[in-house]
Image: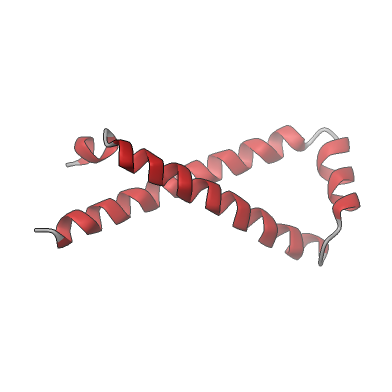
Amino acid sequence: MFTTIISSKRYWIWVFRLGIGFMIIFSIVEHFMQYGGLAYDTFIEEKINNGRWIRYVISRIAGGLIYGIILAYYFEIKKRKSNR
């Protein structure tokens, strides 16, 4: 069952959707918690001008991918078990 789920095109579409959603929501929540509101100038100074933007982007992509893979697999397993 694992290989059939992983090879499904629909599974990877859901991984992408869940990953993008996670990246957006997590980044917004983290921004508000770290800066206490909308502080674009401080964010740009810390993350982009100091050269830490590569680390920031890679961490978002990795986190979103892992989150998407886990949740999409969970939802697919749950759906297949309910169809039995």
